[in-house]
Length: 160
Image (tube, rainbow, N blue to C red; front, top):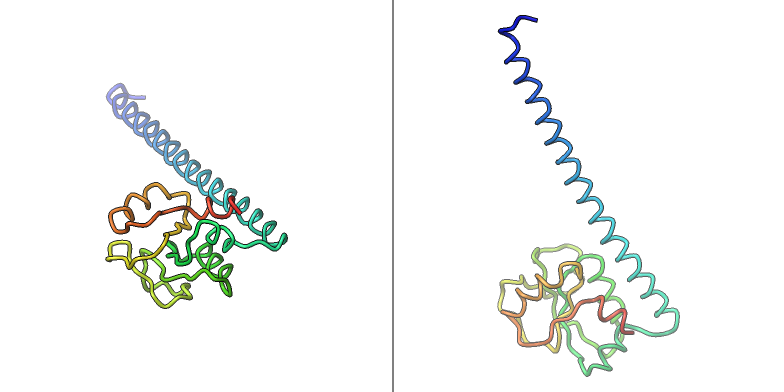
């Protein structure tokens, strides 16, 4: 190799090494993201499994709300877990007054009134946060908008 080419080759090798390090860092970030998603899905599985066990015993999440003295609730998160909660409360003495979702046009919601977290929220007895993995951040936002208790779906299901 020509000695004049040595700095160019070293720079190329350095660039390749830096690229590989960045690639590994990206792969680690990607792997960490996937692991976080696996953990959330595992938590969902455990929660839903317990919920089915409770239903098999003839109990419902409505029992928790009645025990707490809450008859009117709002549900934050109109995705799958929010829908399951609304379904579980159908036919009970617990009324879902409205939903709260960042996507107020969410097509999954089966309730007529869905508010954005930034909206002025009507009074209700309690707000149940269904994306419980993000509960603390969501609670901080909702505390500025609502005077009622804010609880996680996880608390409800594991308390039945």
